[in-house]
Length: 378
Image (cartoon, rainbow, N blue to C red):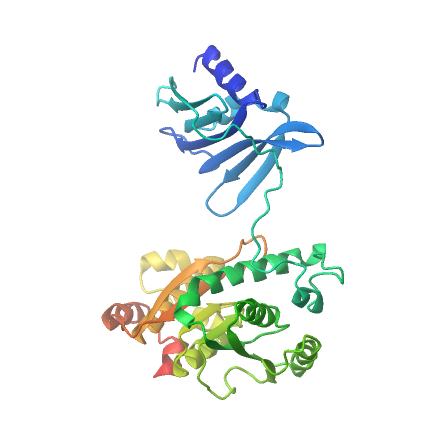
C-alpha cells in the first residue's frame, strides 16, 4: 500500500466532526482477520469526540474506544481486511484493497441526514425494563427499580429468553395460554414470561415445577406478593413424577442430564404447541458412546472431545426425535457464552408433519445407541 493512500484514509476517518460511520469487512487472500466485520463511529466521551470500534466475530461483540490521535488505520488494514466503507457528512468513500495491496477508491455523495449520533451507549430495547416490579421481587433490581450490577447477567438472560417468546407468540395464540416451567429453580423465567404475556392482555396460567420444596415455598411467596397466586402456581416434584397435563408452552432451562429428556417427553405427551428447552450436562449418552471406527477413535481418545461430541450428538438426536413426533425444530445459541456456558436452545413448534425416520435410525445404528428420550416416547 502506498503511504499517501494510508494517510488519506487515516485523515478521512480521523476528521471525526465530519465522520458518520466506517464499516470494515471482507478479507484479502491468504489473510485471516480477527473479526468478520468492524463498525467504527464517532462517540462523545467526557466532552471529547472519540472513535468507537465494535468488532464482530460471529459469536460476540468487542468494543473499544480510541482518541482520534491514537487510531492507526494501517494496523487495521495489516490484519487483512479487503473493504472499507467510510460515510462522512459530505461524501461516502468505498475502498477496496486488492490482493496485491493496491487501494481502489470510489466516491459518491452522502444522501442520508447530516446529523451525527455521538451517543456512546446505544440503548438496546428491553422486553421488560429493569424497573418492572417482578425484577424487584426477584432480587434482580433494587427497590427503586435500578438493576443490581451483580444480577446483570441474569437480567440479560431473562431478556434474551423473552425475545424467543416473542418469536413464537403466533404459534401460541392470543386469547389464553397455559405454560409449564419444568425445573423452574428460582422461577426468574416463570415470572418473566407470565408478566410479559399478561401485559399484552393474554390470560396466562403458569405452573412452575421444581424438585426442591424450598424453591416451591420461596416462589409461592413471591407469587403472593405480586398478587398473581391464582395465575402462577408452584409444585415440588421431579419432572418425571409430575402428572402430565395439557399445556400450550413448555419451558425447561438447564435441567440436568436426562431431566431434559423427561421435560421433552412430558411436553410431547401433553401435546405442547411450543417447546423451549436449554439442555445442561449430557452424561447419559456420553457414558454409552463408543468409537466405531479409526476416525472416531482419534476423537474419543481425548476425554473432553468425546464429551463435546456426545453433547452435540445428544441434542441433535433430541431435535430429530421431536421431528418424528410432528415438531419443527431448530437449535441455536440463545444467550452469549459470556453470561452462561450452557447457552444452546432447542426450539420446537408443533406442525403435525412428521420427520423422516430412516435418517434418525441410521445415526443410531452407526453409533449403536438408543437415546433416552426415544425410550421415554416409545
